[in-house]
Length: 253
Image 1 (cartoon, rainbow, N blue to C red):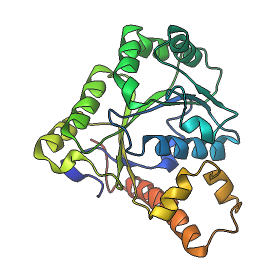
Image 2: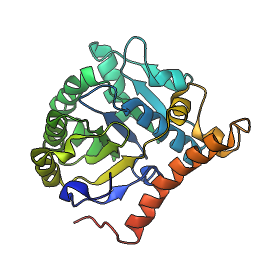
Image 3: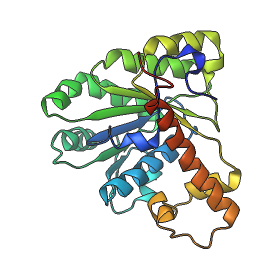
């Protein structure tokens, strides 16, 4: 999977660039489950911890068990989007932000409900008036319907930054001509490609006790050399994609 596939005009972003778009709110979402969405949320939270020195505030919408919250127990809230009080907690909490960074891990079953509230409450305008920087990170999946769902949100929220995430371990629908055509027409702000990983490395990233800020500080000295090398390569691959953008290899239109 390479940058600019499916004749897409947008540049490729990496986790190294996310701190530029996460000064306030990141909404990580997908219309499908089990495609790496929560793992991506964890990676962003780790990056923000590295950049800021403390973890972001997290709203985990996978009520009641949670998923991401288990990795960040001290800074996470598990919320139920079926409850009006929790809806207010999320949306008012973001608008009243005092410089905090937020990550919303939006479970697939609440995907439509969340964005209905987002539009119906005029949150986009409210965020603009509050100078709140909001980015939607949409993990696309293998079905054409996933590209259509991304297109529909992108089209309805013209003033919210929109970034597509492509997980190489899962794949996506962009090999289909119709999906590729829809995707090219979206002209999203950025595209992030997550490299594939071995089962051992992927399992480590998903482990509740693993965090990249600790890894970078050599907090896992007991790891085998091969595992350390793969995890470092994972990060370096993402940074290399940013360098390609910086050199003008894939400029946005």
